[in-house]
Amino acid sequence: MSSTESATLREPVPERGDHLRVSRQPDPPAASLLGEEMDELEDRYLTPPSAEFPRHREDSGWTPLVDGVAYFGALADAIDPLDAGDVLLVSAFHLLTEIDLRGREPGEPGYLPVGEVFARAAARGVDVRLLVAGGAPANLPKSGIGPFRENLVSARALRRWVPEGEPAGTCPLDGRVLLDWSGHPIGSNHQKFVVIRHQGELTAFVGGIDITRWRFDLSPHDRQSVRGKRWGWHDAAQKITGAATARVWDVFRTRWREAASLPRRFYWLPPEPPGLFNPPPLVDEPGPPPDVAPRPTPGKTLQVARSFGPYKRGRGIKPTPSPWTLIPNDGVHEVFRALSAAIDAAERYVYVEDQYFREYPAMRKRFGLYPHVCAAAERGVKVIFVSGGVENNARRSPSRLSVSGRVRRDITEALSADAAENFAFFRISNLTVHSKLTLIDDRFACIGSANFFTRSMAGVDHELSVVLVDAGDDVRDLRVRLWGEHLRIDPADDLTWVSLQNLDTALGAWKPGWGDAIDPETGVSPLLSASMEQVLLPVRTDVGSPVARR
Image (cartoon, rainbow, N blue to C red; front, side, top):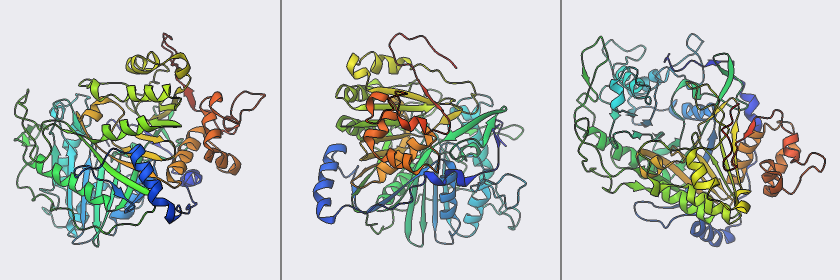
């Protein structure tokens, strides 16, 4: 087990999260209304389509997957039946080979590490390829910068992996694992997605969930602990089917060609001699996306949004910028375009879950989303930021209960007094919120790998997200599922779950003045009174407030 994976686990209790799944399948809007309504939704919330950034209208399925138990289970279900002639393409920012996608621990009956899953699939004749984030810190044994050293160890292990029952020396993943260190010198290949072709059909999983053990969690996030203290991990991804999956395939194909043509780079993992990041021979790049049958989905339009920086890389410590082979030389900023346009169009609310809400080195101010958030609040739009009370399991100390300097300068100090009442910021105690998710007006959703800071928007970190506009109830149902989780609503309290569907009522859970159903005795929303436990911690957003710590 990795030294950073110090969390302990209790037995999984999947049924605790069952009430958060939306079981009702809403009726699609009447066909006669869809054309006009979809035109209006697309024009309002989406950027104009192009050949490079197309819209997939009513031809692609979309299923949100909240938290690791749901995501890894869906991924395992999709990988298990793969056989000769099928395809499995994996892009990982952080990959550890010992995680069991079903949550079993080493020594438990049926334990199957994901490294064995990949190797067995390749041995069966599945075209398995893995792109894993590499970087200069991979050569530093204790750099503490990103997952790159662990990724290097995982890539080497996968290339040498002999599946159970195969003869010694049979390494079916050799030449099929690439470390990708393209892009900005202090950026990363942060895209997290999987593409599967099974019996001619494509399925893609896109989100922010890394293939590591501590991501395996579910609400109410009480089954893990770090150094004896309760801790959990909240995350999000989505499964897509139909025409949009070809776009995700093409992103992998582009990345594979770019990574395969990087200059040679050596690593050193003592006691072995130095080795190449990507030793030859490598398998050829995947072919173009196969023909994909549309998946009829009335009332939905999807876009697959990318972020790439303006150059590929070069040699040496200070690499001379070199052009991409397939990616435009001025970079790709589709995630920024999509989010800024949707926030500018917001009418009722903007809800964002993110790990940071602060900036890091290599920020690019012109790609900032906070000015768009500020303008939305000035229009009367309710803006809600949600982040974790604990940043991650390696940094167990509580996060600040005050805003970062960038949020203070670009939002709280920039807002008028009236508009400041439209902004709320909460942290969730004993929880890492790792999801990169934005919901707007119960009509727009964006889930992916892109954080809400300028590094992701500018392409310093390479990202992939999926954007959705929906004329039905799917975005609303996802909002209900998330807000119910964070409010810790009792699964048996059907009345409260129904109340959360009413946006006028639900907004009052964040600020009393935002809701239409406030208890006159307590002055708060009855939704808060229905909580099984209070885990939402308000972050101080008043200008000049002292730093507050728990």
